[in-house]
Image (cartoon, rainbow, N blue to C red; front, side, top):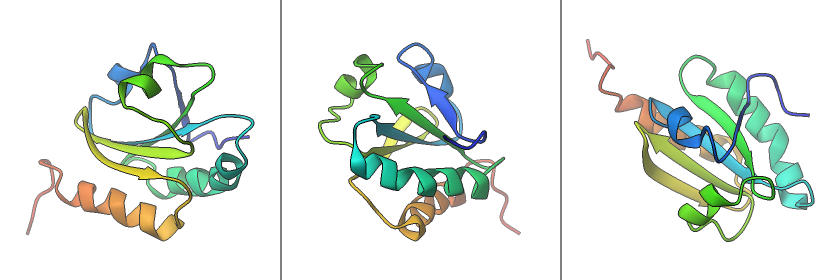
Length: 116
């Protein structure tokens, strides 16, 4: 089961939920073995970035419209959004450190970040 820090996105709430800040969305399905292997990584990232970035999952079987809009053809696919715009895509399994670095890159360029 997903961590309580991982949000659940649907075709209905996707646009609102990805409109602000840095948002990582895991496109997955129950029957997908690699998706199940990635799930603990997604949970860990949600805890690590809690309060700084949103981490969510979208079940492609239950929500066909959004994956089609972003041409998601293989799962797991991770899409990173910044202020509502698709910023980066990862298809397949990737190490937690690689995904964390991707999120950090986009957090570092947040307009609200103040440099001393």
